[in-house]
Figure 1 (cartoon, one colour):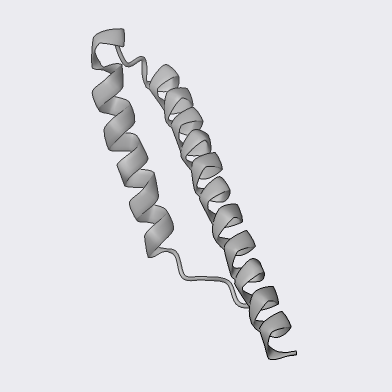
Figure 2: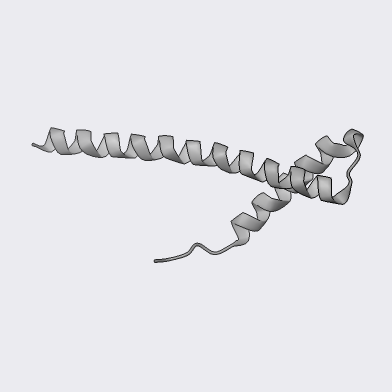
Length: 72
């Protein structure tokens, strides 16, 4: 019985880690899309776009990290 419980717990932890990774990738794509929209609004030249995106994404990540977690 203990092995079954341990196995179930390990599978649950594994599933959570996979979904966390997928969420991170989705968030990265979302951040990049938002930054591309900002760049378009700001009229960033194509030659400067890569640097702009990099700085923008880092800035948005810092903002997200500074936000307190919501507790339900």
